[in-house]
Amino acid sequence: MRQSTYLLPTLREAPAEAETISHRLMLRAGFIRQLAAGIYTYLPLGWRVLRKVESIVREEMDRAGAQEILMPAMQPAELWQESGRYQVYGPELIRLHDRHEREFALGPTHEEVVTTLVRNEIRSYRKLPINLYQIQTKFRDERRPRFGLLRGREFLMKDAYSFDLDWEGLDKSYWAMYDAYTRIFTRCGLNFRAVEADAGAIGGEGGTHEFMALADIGEDTIATCTQCEYAANLEKAEAGPGVSEYREVAVGEHEKFHTPNIRTIEQLTESLGVSADRFIKTLIYLADGQPVAVLVRGDHDANEVKVKNYLGATNVELADPETTRQVTGAPVGFAGPVGLKIPVLVDREVASMQAGIAGANEQDYHLRNVRPGRDFPVEKTGDFRNVLEGDRCPRCSGTLKFYRGIEVGHVFKLGTKYSEKLGAKYLDANGKEQVMIMGCYGIGVSRVLSAIVEQSHDDNGMIWPVAVAPFHVHLIPVSVKDEAQIKVAEELYDRLRQTGVEVLMDDRDERPGVKFKDSDLTGIPIRLTVGKGAGEGRVEYKERAQSESMDLSIEEAMDRIV
Ligand code: ATP
Ligand code: MG
Ligand code: MG
Ligand code: MG
Image 1 (cartoon, rainbow, N blue to C red):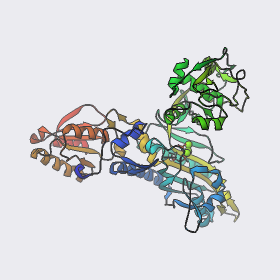
Image 2: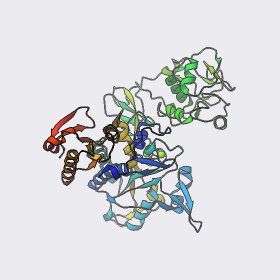
Image 3: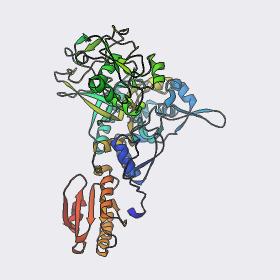
Image 4: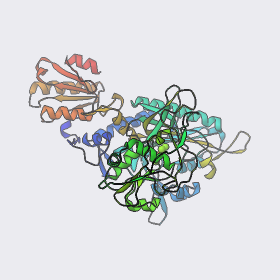
């Protein structure tokens, strides 16, 4: 490809709304452009990477024996009513009408469609097991689409569905997918962990694992043992016995503080003399599954990100004053679990904080040293989610360490949930009707791109692993006006392409500094610069991940690359 006519619009600055590194870099390096919130166009470079991830997924799914199909995005609402999910799924499901006023939904997932297909096409045990998959655009009207491709409203997913004769069969299908996922994410160059997950909303009777790419901006927290293989999403994690101790909060009289113009959690906690970390952990802990309202004005999304980045607190909602009042019954201008029913027991860490913060029922005021139970009513609710970093592993004598993770894949034993409702049955060897046992397996193909960039970049831009890089070699004639340089560059361009190397040649009439900056930004793994040495047949070879470059002859450069 020749860059002079290639659609590769790089930007010096990323738009202000891009909060994460991957989002900023994808925009700056001309990989994606936003059309509407959570809806993106893939420009040529982004599309090339997406296709590479896709083909790794496809190869490994095929190798695992799954069969590729393509199902419609537009699904009749009746199917969702049959499965019972039409109401349950909520506003994330995009609903529409056709010209005959028939209701449809845009598929966020395809259990209903695939189960119906298999119900209609498979009758005999001889045709099972079967695993059907597709790589297809999904639609989810996410409450807060963000971070570029990480949480889109229209995104590319690989979804697979297995149908087995019995539970032993499902177990085999499940672990075959688990292994395929391990190969896929390894080939994509991701640093990831497979973790035990919470069955949650999809519902199912078996186990489930999430594949988590480790990254600080990840929205999930995972607990992993320092000694054994134990790893679980915090939503599911357990702690071994004998570590957490519960105490009542021991605090003095509460004090009222004037806290005007507070816009961030840090400002608030600083003005009250506690660390933001402690403050948020306390809120989350005390609220125990109930909504916590934090802060009221200022940069809402940024604050929510911060809160969610602590302990994977999915129950935390940040609200404006009006919503806050509606959700919690709490007053305007406050932070903390005021007016909520909260548990009195707290753990050692929280107790040592010695300062509960709450709203003062008055704008621009906060209370410090609040004592739940003394200062407002308290009621113990359910079990504590009390796994803290440093707690004991439930399996061995090791301790738990926390990481942040991006959910890039999910394998799930569904059992008979959908096959029963939608009537996916087969006749066994004795002619007796049996319900098929299902599993489902998703990979966020487009999300993987962002996860890779989160893990693989430096101050100058992206650093693509070769297996998914948009091009292998970035060929840069320093001056397109220099005949010797152009001659060598054109020769290299042809020879590399003939050997199957994907080359992008920067044939633009730009200053070298601009070309090098753009090259670093796009993260193509090898840069070949044709400069002053061209006349003597010398070129500069540099790997994006290395800081040093090498002065090589054309043949030496070819040998290194091919
Ligand atoms: P999350 O917890 O991030 O909302 P999920 O558990 O709802 O994801 P699944 O239903 O398990 O997602 O879908 C399978 C995979 O699709 C996920 O593991 C994830 O990689 C990807 N995915 C889900 N939602 C999105 C989204 N909004 N944008 C991009 N990828 C997504
Ligand atoms: Mg989701
Ligand atoms: Mg999830
Ligand atoms: Mg999931």
